[in-house]
Image (cartoon, rainbow, N blue to C red):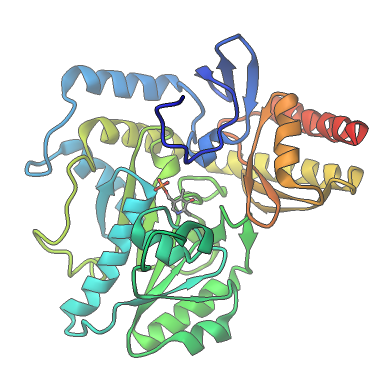
Amino acid sequence: MSALFQTYARAPMEFVRGEGVYLTTADGQKFLDFGAGIAVCSLGHAHPRLVKALGDQAETLWHVSNLYRIPGQERLGARLVDNSFADRVFFTNSGAEALECAIKTARKFHAQQGNPEKYRLITFDGAFHGRTLATISAGGQEKYLEGFGPAVQGFDQVPYGDIDAVEAAITDETAGILIEPIQGEGGIRTVPWSFFRQLRDLADRHSILLIFDEVQSGIGRTGKLFAYEWTGIEPDIMAIAKGIGSGFPLGACLATEAASEGMSAGTHGTTFGGNPLAMAVGNAVLDIVTEPGFLERVSELGLLLKQKLAQIVDDNPDVFELVRGEGLWLGLKCKVPNQDVVASLMDQKLLVVGAGENVIRIMPPLIVDQEQIDDACNRINNACKAYRERR
Ligand SMILES: *Cc1c(COP(=O)(O)O)cnc(C)c1O
């Protein structure tokens, strides 16, 4: 019997080694990894520069408390600020913790302004914000809430992309609007970028905060450093995680000076967040992702992959319905159960990840090349053929 909580229905595979976009099992099978640990391994596996950054830091200093100054944290914070709308950063170990900080920051902002009754956030159907008690309540998905007692109060869910519903949901108790620029777990669900401009207008008109969950979309995944850059507007608060650590547990909550005003000394904290090891990796990731041409390359390869996937949809209309997404963050909506497609692709030694709305997510490490994209697309075509023959 396994000693582990049975919270995951795991595939019976054990990867023991990773290199670039490839993963190898204990018995020597090599897989092409287009899931990247659910959009985490932004620079692939065992990137030499990340290995060196982590190794050098490991030999120097692992951990000091946030009771002291941490130079790597100040440096990464300043660089995130230089490369975004934000003025302030709080480091965490995960996406959900970054969201917790974002939610607390929004509530505290209004409390600080003398309006503690403004604590509610408007959220969207299909959302995913993590698995803590507050973030399952924010996500509002019954399957994640069930059996865990009363939901955390203060989240009002409306349909994704419905501006009238957002406006109607704003009350004297509303603190802000929390949204993913593209829904990842929801199935690479998109709304027109113009929707975010409307949200910004509404937020400004009602003096409430706009919060972006970029835990999955951030750090180059869409071809911009942050997906909000596509929208033409800026949020007040943003949560990031996944790609910034490329596999090392690291998240952050970013905010403007004004929005972060309530988060004064003693109001929030973390033991591990922003620890020197994580900061060494985060700084090295940012070194690479902000190199000239890196994001342009993500956009170009993303476009190429999307075109190829569109062709695959055309060629396999019995399996796929459509392709959607931005950059190297693409979803194939399936006509057959998506988990069957994930399994068929596993037979072809291609890893992808399922999502809502019967979608499979194609999200290779951002360092993928054209040849590997061609290889993956061949494997998808082969999987369709094999799936068809089996039926
Ligand atoms: C993964 C994810 C989270 C949760 O991150 P964890 O590190 O698992 O806590 C939150 N929001 C979005 C959009 C995510 O994709």
